[in-house]
Image 1 (cartoon, rainbow, N blue to C red):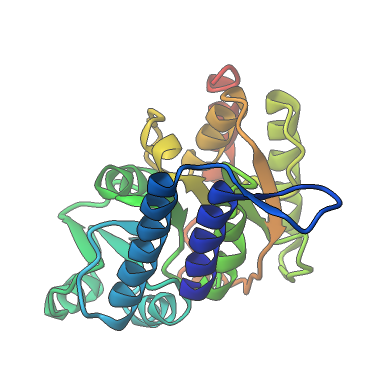
Image 2: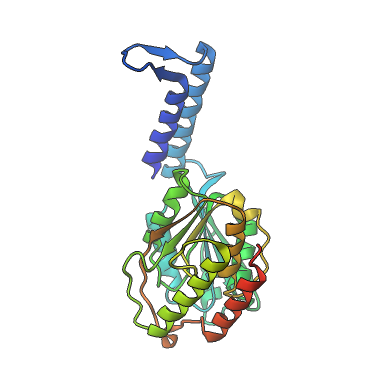
Length: 288
């Protein structure tokens, strides 16, 4: 990732400074000598900063990506999720973990972690729901891109790279990682049919053409998501943010993402009451 950002920065600077005439080998300058030097110096400075951040020589004072991890009673899987994010994400990534009133030892484990740059832990004494946890983390985020990753390992953080990439490349403002574009297997027919119904209804109300509105893997332009007022506290966050993004006329893309379903005996929390609530949220936010 650092290599791509470095090459893109230098390429952008070069494109701004030079232009090639069609059908000729002659290079022409579009900028004065002073402007040319300033732009090249700026690009080289960005490359040097990226290298320093990647090597740990200096702390990052800004981030390309903020990964939000809402967690409630996921002591066994949360350490693996954080480790995986650190392994696969770009160097200039911050992780924001919101402990939403866990009672299974998650809080104690988070307290034992050494403080370090790029990891923010926010704790609540009581459980308020995933949507509320995500809202809290968004207010603390600093990344150019804000992405969401669950703490239960149903979704691999490595697949989140595919979700954030179109925004880094400037091809989208919002990207959803669809479980159904990637051929992921959910053994529960009830879950598949419920998700299909909710997504189809959401599409009718928003005009989008999504295949997986309820996916966890979502990524947003950072300024965009920080500028949207959100209200839902539980899983109603998914239809709410989808409706508000749709009314904003932003560029929305879907890409495949992996999925390893787990059952309620393994800690799955979403249920039929949340599906009913989602229907109400779709109607409530149908106009954004």
